[in-house]
Length: 419
Image (cartoon, rainbow, N blue to C red; front, top):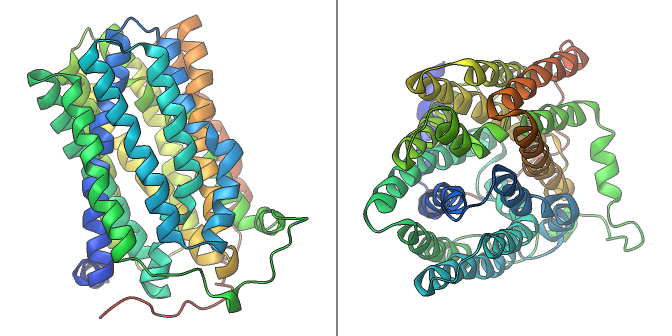
């Protein structure tokens, strides 16, 4: 029953490890979203073009293409909490540097882009470890609920972060957003060191590491049909639809002649939709096949993008962004559930790295290509093309696995959560 599934999911928040991890992640993501709202607006204020806004987003996500598979190996072979704490500490220095540049009046667009690249590198190496934490602190039957709850805090931060950014930008300016971003790293670094499981993954679950073929596990995952198609669903959604959020400031500023407060409202609307989607997944039974949910909502994301490119009223755009956030949340969380419950435990980090490659890598490439098409055609035209292609791509992928049987889990997950 949906009510029973929802109550069982919520109980996870009252466990020591998961509850603390969830709350620290929420604080960290609020700061991150405050910066991500301020940063493109700051670039535009410094005279950067729409193409440079796309380049900045590309710089933050492009390292995923080169380094995330190595990050997956780190997640499978190293102490995940040290990997997370180390790279998060490096990442925290980037907003601190931006604050210093703003205080001295020496900030330039290229400096922000270079710092985004550093954030992208640390993210690519640490995110597989971060994303594979949930299965290590909950029971296997709770993985889907844990991932959905993790998505709720991420999307709650998408609401609170932009709202906070709007207040700060209207009062103290963009610098306030970067100060909040830097401070938000501290709770999560503390949780990574004190709360998360110590040590490396159990060696009994993992075959000997082959230095000559370090990415052999990737081939196993890619050759598994339902995993491959789930990853393709998310990749094309990120490639074609995720740029809607990247170019929201351009759409608000050029098409609707809006201000920073209106832009913050659109990002908050996207977060509200994501929260609704993630909350809805909490009521979905753990045995339900997530693949079809991912496919249908990915196609809906493309349709929403088409309407967002056509509507003439700002408030219509806000409503569509709620739907877009819902579609993206359900698509990505459902794919993540398929990946983490279907991959063998000794390959989970590498499976998650492929998921991150699909989400972040697809978004990075999409931001760059959409930035070019926005410069050549205009923002509405570029988004209309993206939405149309996204619908076609998801229809083709959905046909491949529509009638495929539901896969069975390859191994069991012991309970490591606390009562």
